[in-house]
Amino acid sequence: MIKTITVRGMTIGEGAPKICVPMVGATLSELKDEAAYLKSLDLDLVEWRIDFFEQVEVIGKVKEAAAEIRAILVDIPLIFTFRSAKEGGEKEISSEYYIELNKSAAQTGLVDIIDVELFNDEQDIKRLIEAAHGHGVFVILSNHDFEKTPSKDEIIARLRKAQELGGDLPKMAVMPTSTADVLTLLDATNVMNEQYADRPIITMSMGGKGIISRLAGELFGSALTFGAAKQASAPGQIDVKELRRSINLLHSNL
Ligand SMILES: O=C1C[C@@](O)(C(=O)O)C[C@@H](O)[C@@H]1O
Image (tube, rainbow, N blue to C red):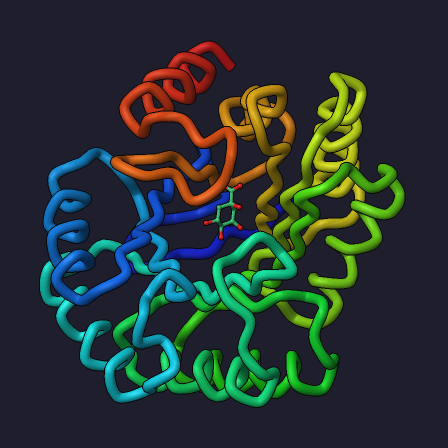
């Protein structure tokens, strides 16, 4: 039995996968416009991709922006994500600042979930999770391979590691180079979900080939999917309206 996670009244891990749309603004004014636009869409969560924000290295500015974004989104669940360049993001920062940034975001109480990359020091991860939980903030423990799709066993091992370390939502994004790779990701998701997971997991196969993985999460065991509004944050994200239509189609026939 997979446990669920409830954020601001929205439950992840039951029914159709929840839809998350990223915000990728570089300035506060862009972010405010983006947030206002996202508010008008049919989505379940918003992800603030803070690595796109040009003032990401000034904690005070990050907090200020978080407050403005929260004021616009009101009660929409918000994920705070600094995606490192080595995992497909825009920038690289020191590991010390990475920890400080995430901890500060969690402490504000303005974000609901932080996304922490699994390939960091284990003690740092554990401390960060503890700090986040202390403020009622959930943690996605994530890993991304923008080059290839690791083996099924490796994908499962990383998701299990994320669970063991205490991540509330283990997540894995991989790039397929063949149709078989897409099947590998789906198979790993299904096995993880049925045999090992005691919490919701999130997986996706990126790029055009992987689109099925973004639609069929309810069948294979991925609880959340990323869709695009004006600008995608990763290859293969489809428009949020079409995404909703597709997951509803699958949901109503399962
Ligand atoms: O990790 C993920 C998933 C993602 O890479 C995707 O493929 O949809 C998009 C990112 O913004 C997010 O942080």
